[in-house]
Image (tube, rainbow, N blue to C red; front, side, top):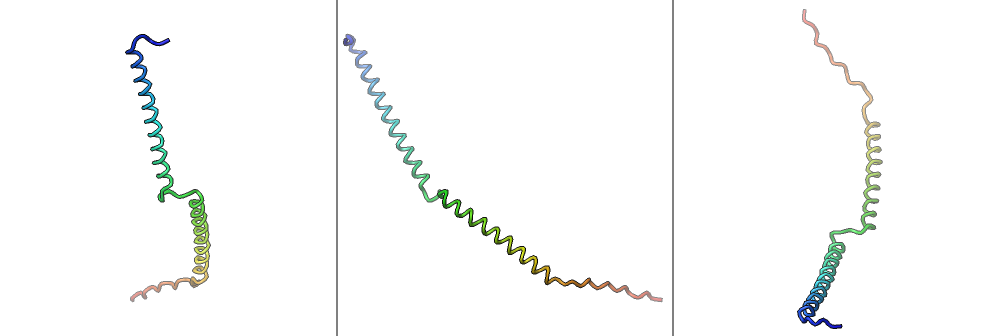
Length: 96
């Protein structure tokens, strides 16, 4: 059964058209945001998890090697250090 009032029919068409337009704008905005996010994540400024883990492992290995070299250097310096006691200071002779 059709409505006899043309105003309500026209109003229903306008509201349906607006709903379709708003839904389309929402889909377009969502697609745009996804594209921006994809560009941000995929840019050169971000590193992958694998690259991060590889650099982290290299840093740990370098720190361990540095500690070993420091220990060796300390041992070498300790073995080269003079074992003599410092000479006692001479007291000036007292005048009579």
